[in-house]
Image 1 (cartoon, rainbow, N blue to C red):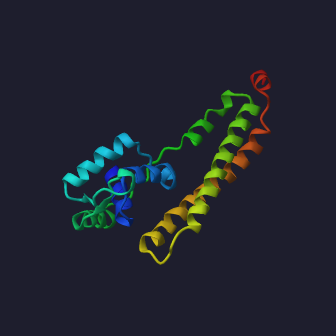
Image 2: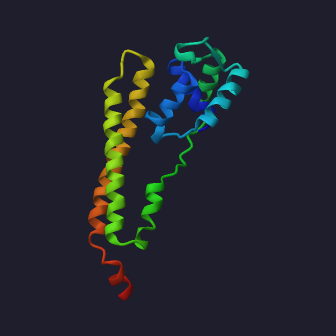
Length: 180
C-alpha cells in the first residue's frame, strides 16, 4: 500500500487536515500503516497538484482540510478493485522474539510482559474508538471492519505474549543453558 492510497482513504471518509491525518496515523492506523508528518505533508501537496484532493479553505486553528475530488475517488476505487493487497508487514516484536535466547529468561519475560501491556492499552483504545462510530455513516461502517481487524490482531498478540511468557518460564537460566 502506498502512502497516497492511505491518504486518499482517510480523506474520502471525511475532509481532514494534515494535522488530523497525523493524529489518525498515531492512533487508529498505527497497526496498519505508519507515516511521519515529513512524509504526509509533501504527499498531500502532490495529491492536490494532481487534482486528487483539494483544499476546502482555512478551518479551525488555521488548519487546511482537504477533500477528495471525483478523480481521487476514481483512483481509490480503481486501487480497491484492480490491485491485490500487499501482505508484507513488519513486526519488531516478533523479530525480537527470535533473539530472546540471548537474554536471561527473566529479561525475556519482562520484555514479553511489556509487550502484552502495550497491546492491552492499544486494545482499550481501539474498543473506545469502535464505540464512537456512527454506523449510519458509510465511512464509519467501513472503519468498523478495519477496527475489528485491529482488535482481533491485538487480542492475538496478547494471547501470544501470555503463552510466550509461560514458555520462557520453562527455559533454563542462561548459565544453565551454556553448561548443557
